[in-house]
Amino acid sequence: MSFSAGKSVDWPNSTTENEDEKFTNELRREKSSAEDVEASVPVPGHTISSQLESQEVYQLRDVTTANGQVETYKIVVFSPNDKANPKNWSKARRWLITMTLSLVCFSVAFSSAVVTPGIAGVAESFHVSSEVALLSVTLFVIGFGIGPLVFSPLSELYGRWIIYVATFGFAVIFIIPCAVAKNIETLLLCRAIGGIAISVPVANIGGSLADMWKPEERGIPMASFSAAPFLGPIMGPMIGGFVYENIGWRWLYWLQLILCGTFFVAILLFVPETYAPVILETRAKKLRKQTGDHSYKGEHELLRRSFKNIARVHLARPLLLLFTEPIVTLFAIYAAILYGILYIYPIVFEEGKGYSAGISGLMFLPITGGIILGLLGAPMVNRQYIRKRSKYTGLPPPELRLLPMIWVGPCLAGFPIGVGFVFLYNSFNNYIVDAYQHTAASALAAKTLLRSIWGGSTVLFTTQMYHNLNPRWASSLLAFLALACCAIPFTFYQFGAAIRKHSKYAYSE
Image (cartoon, rainbow, N blue to C red; front, side, top):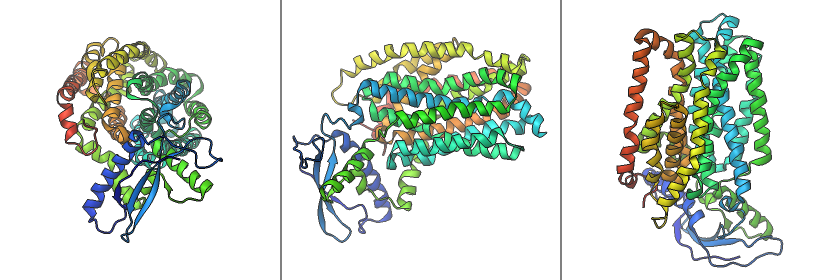
C-alpha cells in the first residue's frame, strides 16, 4: 500500500458552516473529489496484505470532525495503470459496453414512437378522440424529461449500474399493463410511469461514456450513442405501421416488451459499474473488511448523504444547470427542436398526403440513410479533433467539439436530414460532456427534460398547426426556428471559454 501527503479538510457535517456555505462548499467538495479520483498520482505502492490481488493505493487525508477532532483517513485512489479504472479497460470491453448501452438507448427511443401508427386503433378501442389517444405518446415522452431529473443525479451518488437496472427493469414491467389495458386510463397511467422509468438510461449513457473513454477517444463512441435517439423514432413508425395494420395496436406493446426485455438482460450480462468514485468506495469497503483498518475511505464516503443534502445538492442540479448555465439551456433548446421534427414527420405525411400508417413510416428511410452516412463520417471528425487537441497541453477547450456543428448540420440538414442530426447531436453531446465532465449526467438530464417536453408536445399541436397555417407556413415556422439555432454553436465557439469561467459547474482552464 502506498500513500501521498494529504491535506486537512473540514468534515462535511461541520456545525460551523451556515446553510448557504454548506451548500456552496458541498458543491465544491464534490467537484474536486471527482477530479481527484482521476488526477491524483500517488507514489509507487506496496501490497499491504497477501489476500489482496493488486497493489492498492491511497492518499492520507486529515479530516476535522464535527466535534473538532482531527482524524486521518486513507483515501483510496487508482494507481496509474489500475485495471479497475474503467479508462484502463480493454478497448473490446469498452466497446461491448458502449454498444450495449447504445442499443438500450435505441430501444427506449423506439418505444416512444412505435405506438404512433396505432393511435387510431387506440381511439377506436377505447372510444376516445385521437387527441386523447395521442397522450399515450405525449405522456411517455414528457416522462423522458422527468425521470433523469431524479435518477441522473443519483447515479453520481450511488453509481450507474444500480440505476440502470432498477429503472429499466421497472420500465420493462410496466409495458405489460399497456399491452393488456382495458381502458384508456390504465394505458395513459402506465405509459406515463413507464416513460419516467425508461428515460434514465438515455440520460445516463453520456456519463457512462465519459467514465470509460478519454476525451480523445470519445468521439466515435459518442457518435454511436448519439445516433440511437434518432434511429429509434425513425424505425418505430416504419415497423409499427405494418405491425398495426396486420396484427393490431396491442402488438406494438408486445414488440416493445420483447425488445426492451432483451436489452435488459444484456445490461445484466455485459454492463458493470463504470463510475470511478463508486468503484473506489467499493474497494475501500473491501479493504476495511480484509484488513480490519477502518481508516480506509472512498472520497465519496466523506460526502453527506442526508435526504436534505441529496435534494439540495444533487436532485436540484439538473434544474440549476438548465436555468443558470447558458451552454445547457441553448443546446437543450436546439436538441428539443431537432427531436420534435421526428415526431412531426409521420403526422405531416398522413395529414398532408393521406398516406397509410405503414407508408408514412417508410418516409423515414431517407433519414435513416443520412444517419448511417453521418455515423460513417464520425471517424473523420474524431481525427480532426485529435489533430487540433494535440496543440494544447492538458485538457483542450470543449469548444473544439463544435467545429462540425457549425457547418455540417446547417449545410446538410435538408439533404438528408439524418446527416445533420448525427453531426449536430454528436457535437453538442460531446461538448456538454467535455464542459461539465463529472456532472455530465446532470447536464444531459437537463437537456433531456426540455427535449422531451417539446418532443412529446409536438404530436398534440402538429395537426392543428398544419391545418391552420397551411403546410408551407407551418414548415417555414420550423425552418425559422432551426435557422435561429444555427447561431448557437458559433456563439459558444467564440465565447464558450469566457462563459465557462463564470460557471460553478463547468470545467475551465
